[in-house]
Amino acid sequence: MRDTRIEIDVLTSLTDIPAQEWDACACPETADGGRPYDPFTTHRFLKALEDSGSVGPGTGWQPRHLIARLGGVTIGATPLYAKSHSQGEYIFDHNWAHAYERAGGRYYPKLQIAVPFTPATGRRFLLRPGHEELALPALVQGAVKLALQNGVSSLHCTFCTEAEAEAGAKMGLMHRISQQFHWENAGYGSFDDFLVSLSSRKRKNIRKERATAQGFGGTIRALSGDQIEPEHWDAFWRFYQDTGSRKWGTPYLTRAFFDIAHEVLRDDILLVLAERNGRPIAGALNFIGRDTLYGRYWGAIEDHPCLHFEACYYQAIDFAIAHGLSRVEAGAQGEHKLARGYLPVATHSLHWVADDSFARAIADYLKAEREAVDEEIEVLTSYGPFRKTLSEDE
Image (cartoon, rainbow, N blue to C red; front, side, top):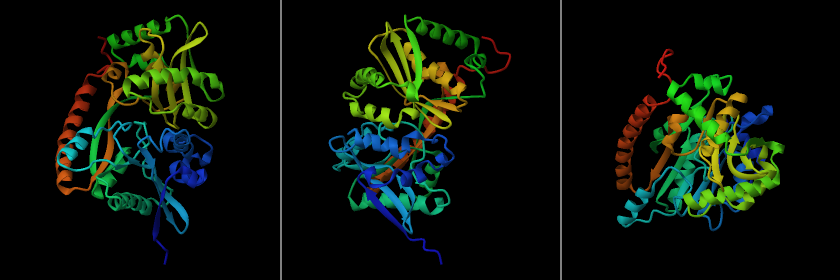
């Protein structure tokens, strides 16, 4: 009889597991030599966060990664962190924390299954092919058990796949729906092909924005792999600091992260730089998946009309079309993306709360929130920039 006893280990660093062992669960598709579907759950990306000090002591993100093993073979893994705040998650639970603490409870620390600072949908329960039925419930149960053993208020899994959300809900976790704006590639051969699918008014507006942006007095370059030089990160760090200080108070990523990214992640990166008089003045950082381009960070030290739209959205669409990618995920929030061809889509998360009465209150809230999000997605989609009929010409 086959031994189906699964051991769950908790790792405080990805240094404690070989990259090949982790990636056999995180990105088994790379065995063919291609890109991972999700660049953010690879060993190299998550370890870069740890090695750079972007997560770890003093950050409020303490690694507690779960590993599921069967007969000594790793069959599943999940990136898990002990959190002392709710920053850098993009699925907001600040109101839950305030309510919990007003009722006399202690919301932090909590456990978070996530890729830090990364609002991109992907698998959060990383399963070795052929072991899915055993590994998934083992990881879910292992995470809940770890929460109970440590007496934390709650466990959260953010930006998981819809399939994971449905499976988790069947195992007793609460399913939450939020929304983002994604661009979908309908087999376009060029940016102009994409524009043809839009209403006349939106088409003209995008052409005007691109012309305005590209007339800023310099050049825009899209760089990847060995095209990226170390000095480009000096420039991007200035951009990132400006954006980070305005949005979050202090940047999430350390300067060391970008140096490590240059060494181990630059083949996963598309860096769009706007340069004027030989000097970078703005930039957008994207990560490249097998089928998706993920927009992550933007910053500038000079203000030029429409340059943000060009660097973040239109250059991303250009790259996706040229490389046959199916979509562009442009990050969290931003209804301004709608007019630029990015439509609302549902994103998913899972939640477990130790206190039964508080869990019931959250479950009621999530039910109402799901209905509201579904309605908002439907309404926003109807206001999208695409032609409603082939003959439409506004």
